Image 1 (cartoon, rainbow, N blue to C red):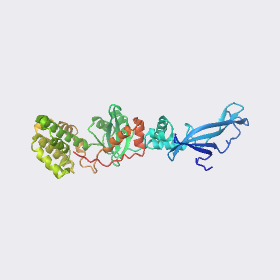
Image 2: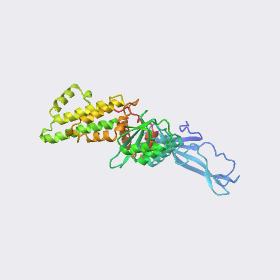
Image 3: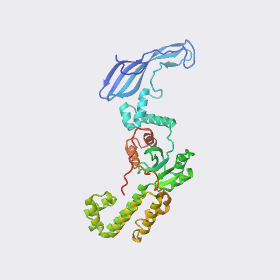
Length: 406
């Protein structure tokens, strides 16, 4: 019979396909007798070993051509006349912890970090719990083997979850290559600081790009006092957008329900966009509409002026432009722009740190989306499994830089 197993030391006897279960059943035996020195592996007695019947066991193997593979293995049993204990032939290529081949265990470890554990369990014919146990062992092995160094520019962001998965996870990113360096189960200051301190003495670390979160700033200053901290400009853009939206909602309430036409909805969809990104007909529609709404027109103009500040090449120019912009915000719109004005006061140094850097520092937006996609998969809502897939799987989390639409 052709050796369809391709496992050294095993000889296939027969094979049959069970179509209802989509399983290929292969009967095999150990081709070589147990070679020993005449000593019992339990007590070490010599010359006291005798044959003690046969043993049949079932092992799972790697799926083949859309079929699960089940190996029915026959092995010789032995008994020791001295200690009265029995033992079997050693089956080479079998996982000592589970009823499957070593190559099947390795295949499961690789596949579990690429697809869902339920899908892998379905392919092999084992339980989902077994797949996750193998995956966790592989993740721990990979962690011991290698650890990514602290990058020169670090990005700190977070992934929020709803009621089903309470809390948020902290995601640390290498901003130079867009790859995730580490994931933490929470966003507490102590956790981030402890992780940073594990790299204490790193000479290549220059700074970090973060959202306006005080605990991130405190953790960075505690671990690396001399590091530069930069506020993610996307968060500033969102704050400017929120101010325009508040002005829109205020005018909407003042106009009354009967004034809410399709045109209002069309214009609202255009307000977050940069004027330079609008098409000609969109620009004409927006211009003609906001002329009749002074507050919205003024808020949109202020937003556009604020975004133009980020086109400055030098820090000094940006600082002067921010001063002029703050002075030009009228009193009747300060409540709409209060979030942005507060940020410019509390985070001024970190906001201005963006200007003059040799490269653009932006947090990749695809990270949040991809991690949530992993969590939506059946059985993948544990932090350990998602972290393993992100750090050691072949899932493409590398992002193109964020297109910032204000």
